[in-house]
Image (cartoon, rainbow, N blue to C red):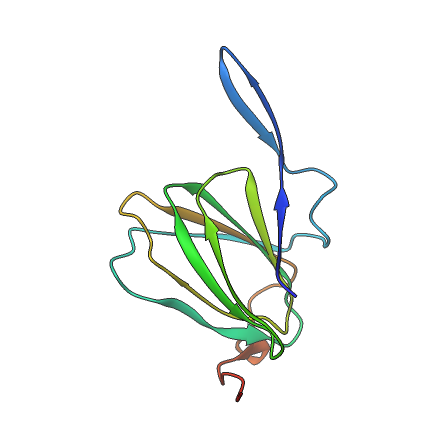
Length: 122
């Protein structure tokens, strides 16, 4: 099931420093960002093998998730929130603010065969 992690953040008069260390439950093989999104819905799939960690570095967005047992929405509105998406998590990203930058860390390199676009039937 998808779940949120709070990333360790150090704050002082100079600003904030958020650390991604020893909390991501996989080795990172791919990093990509999504930004400049209009009112489109992104995603709309789950994976065969890939685990993902999603962090909204700027602005905010919503990730709707369905793992065939639970349906939940996660608001990513701070760079110290990290959403872990398991392969079974069918997800859509939407409601991006104009300034949103969503960074995704992935456990696998891109291969089209890893994507399952069919939504679960309830």
